[in-house]
Image 1 (cartoon, rainbow, N blue to C red):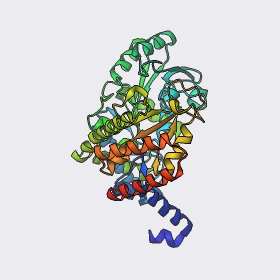
Image 2 (image 1 turned 60 degrees about the horizontal axis):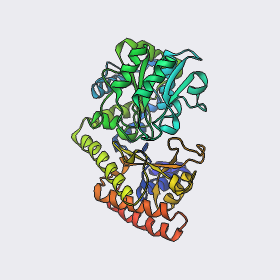
Image 3 (image 1 turned 180 degrees about the horizontal axis):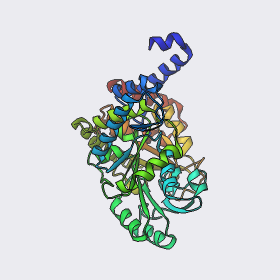
Image 4 (image 1 turned 135 degrees about the horizontal axis):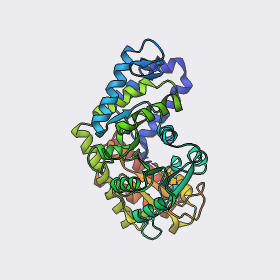
Length: 411
């Protein structure tokens, strides 16, 4: 990046420092991943210069001959990859995409159901601090207090009682398999729309290691980063009968000109996700998560639901002290292990002082680490959790982490 270095050395140095950080630490935030160089090159291409409000062949600006083709390729690849009838590839990110879907089917004040944030849902699934929870009437459902699992009979009873117009299935911190078919059945029983938010597990779904909500689900939203290993962005997939509603809600309802450079990068990621190498990565991501969970359990670390079926693990830090999630996440970072503090189901502490830690294996798998490395990482995590103030221990582990990372360079 010699041109950037000459143009703005301050920004250049910060980017270089971030590149070094990513190389030398274990990035275990499950919503993060590393893209291919091809994806990054598309994001930085001349396509970022072009305004293209509207949809292919129906633009408000001239000069869209080539971006039309790019977007049409992205649409076709998304439909084929997921088995969808319709795809909108323009959403800037997951949150505005979810809001566009709510906007398409709800009037302000109308109701929808979503998984409670502390139970592993997302802000846009009805959190009272999010637009989804202020513009609309959000009806939460939660995990079973004792099993910490989704109780679909409970979900159905809430749906029958409140008759929401939309039911959201999806997760950001739930480590078990989702039964999208049952969600769809409940939605159909009450005449509601079923929205499946598969942002975290899209890569697992297209690789065949998690059940897909398609083709039977009404609307599906996914971000294109996370396990899918694409650029920061989102897409909306739906049945053809809802295509016009969705497209109109995205543009002009929620957005202006799409980011065609990012759409090109999405198209590349969709192509990459059809390869055998990608399928191997997705399978290994789950193997790694389960190996890591077993290593943590062997060290006496408590996990929500007792393990994982997907790419993420939620550590229950309450045995170490209520509301210590952030403190423990900072301690882990000092040891070269980057995670995020997270609420746990029925957390007695507020979201700013959560009692859990969320970790994931997508990036470690992208770096080609496997079960033996997961066992070692589990031991390191447990050591830090048991000794959160031992800075000498943290520095020692950080040195070992750096040595491990040198063996598995960034893609």
